[in-house]
Length: 180
Image (cartoon, rainbow, N blue to C red; front, side, top):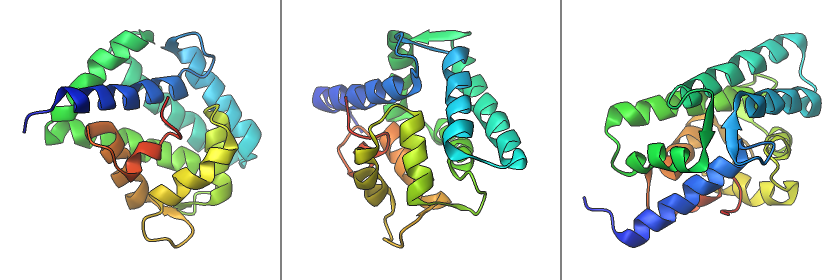
């Protein structure tokens, strides 16, 4: 299937949003420092137990290793966009890798380890990513497709994959909060 110029522009907007959420310190680079700050925030805002802190630290390290290994220890927005541009026509292996990274994100956000993300955990996630908490409800509701008041692993992964690998607008557009 051919991707139109309009779809390419829309996907680029989504990836710029993703980059902005991962650039925690706002210096126009994704670095290990951003991931360390994200980890610190999850621990500070989420108030996890010692076991959960270890899970968060391991999860964040796994995520940044997978993302930053593409380009070294830092990544500019243009490098990030160049890497993610290929996502629109990704083969199943690339999508599986993305699903694996999203699964680690899920585990970090699910700070109490009960297998679902609550409204409170999702608000902590948005706060950690510098997204105004008032946007959390709309995003949560878009991801919670069965409307049971929690986000299951499958709902999170399916919506995240849709956000990352689809060039058309959908409910997944709110996955990282409002698009920039």
